[in-house]
Length: 85
Length: 407
Image (cartoon, rainbow over all chains, first blue to last red; front, side):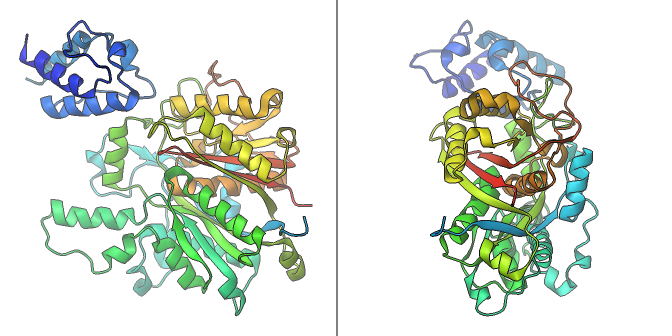
């Protein structure tokens, strides 16, 4: 697993609201019980961790539909990190 | 109704992004003038992602205060005192003894002196200066606007600030209304004020991810969120008998006040909480749902507020909901947080007085989930006998006021 993937999983693990011991790339965000404020906090944590800006407006973006799985979030972050370097 | 007072509004003052007096504010609301524009009030606005807000433009404090006085007045208090003076002048009331002792000053604000707070923090943390301005604390405290109005206007009765974020002013006015109605006081100066267009506050709102980049389009398809605003609006409330005895012009009557707490999510709106606050205002005002023709909505322009508020209106008004004219002044003046409820109650009172529903501007078309009549883009003449003004705050605190045409 890449460094980005393990860091993203660590951040999502902190925010999940279901009793599940480990978070996998294939897990669906919806199944992890992330609520809207959780998403905003998670995005902040990801931006801080990777020093990137994630375009996100809670009114027009829905993380549950745009990012089906944890793996989708990893892909987005990896893209933004790659663009930065 | 012999054991309680009827409570009337005899003075109104407003300093807003679309006018520095209540009359100009109202005229511009009816014209659908938008007060949203580039951010100018903060230092280093170019560093912000957010580029627009609804600022009170061209407000020159030296036109209203002496330089010496200004060293004690944050912008939030300046706006408040100017609006209060206008309201008191319109009410043609002088606070001699003993009326001064029997007049309340109840003022809503979300935070207080945010400009002072921001400038002090900038000096200390960004500029590494070791000192801040000596009156930093009494300028920034949340009760500063209430204190300054009491001092400038000579009001010696109960005076304090009410803080419930976006519902602060509505809670303040509701409380003042109940105090006058019960006879606890003989008069009240009440309203709300906010001056929140500061760098740190804007950064905070950016982090919430709820602001629209360009325009506030409540209830519309394609809405992208709220736009921050600022301003102040103040009212003079007094018992009908006193107003009649003084022979002063009566602008309208406040009849009901309802409050509720969601006890649920910190930021997500709650159908039950909104419903209970609206029902509470109607009950308190001895009104039936069918008595209401106009609703000045909370209408922030966020996806979830407007949807949930629409559902709550359906629940409270049932078959009558489709007959309501519902509009959001935030489309023109942005979200002035702790002042919003006062700006909007002023609009509601004048809408009832003049039988004109101000529009929801920036409306691009119907969102299938928001299916009421939002008075899109153009004011409308219609007979309004009674109306409500909604305020629903972060923290799940809701407040609604009901007003009637005075007759």
